[in-house]
Length: 329
Image 1 (spheres, rainbow, N blue to C red):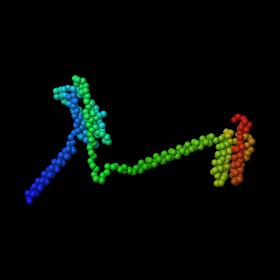
Image 2 (image 1 turned 135 degrees about the horizontal axis):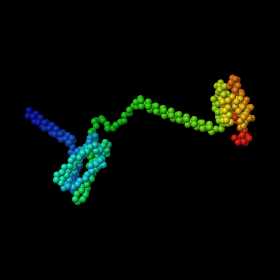
Image 3 (image 1 turned 30 degrees about the vertical axis):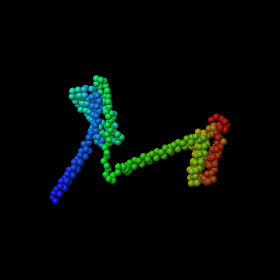
Image 4 (image 1 turned 180 degrees about the vertical axis):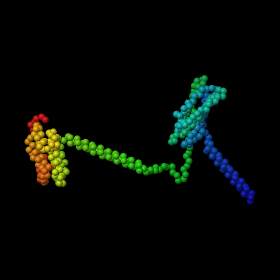
């Protein structure tokens, strides 16, 4: 019985040792992968291009070694700047060993430290031009192109997805406050600009009106306020007489709004273009309005209608003397 257990234990140890050996071989194959090398020879010149890794690992640099060996003394020319021959790599360092010679043979070795560029479609070294100059003249040849595969990424654990879902980050209170401030300022500026443009158009419209058109427009606006219906009789008479006075100022240049009735009537009598036939009706209208404005005289609905009709009749019937007589202004 003991002999059976002993043989089984030896068999188990043998199998276990074999597994360890296989594991070590696989691990060493992955850790110490053979370098990727290409060699080309022509006219006594041998060029060996070697990558220390046979695949590209993201974030891990790789070394490129270029070994140039020549026999019987030919002059070999190979550009040290190979940045234009690299695709998917950037050079982060380089150095050259001191050339060694053995009789007529010369060896030159160059080292380049390369960093893979993330996201590149392909990683490769394009052909390098090698120029050989000798007694028979100059010749050249090219090294083969070398493409390095991208190492396989490790598999994700079970249940982990490679798809990245966007995560919404709530803005801070400060960011929201600043955004609201700029929005409010923009809206305020837009509203202000709208009213400025509207006011400019309104002023241009008023400036284009004739004195009579402007007076009728002001009279209509005054009636729309309905001041008498709200018991504001005195205020209504003040504005009604200002409509007539401003009309006289625009039509004849007499500063009627800033003077008493007697003062601007006296100036009107001295103005040649003023229609003197309208002065009695104008004086009666202004005197009746002054009684309401300054003497607190009562004015009912009929009196208000009479005052409005008198103002409208004066503006409609007023014609400068120069126009009636056909003279020049």
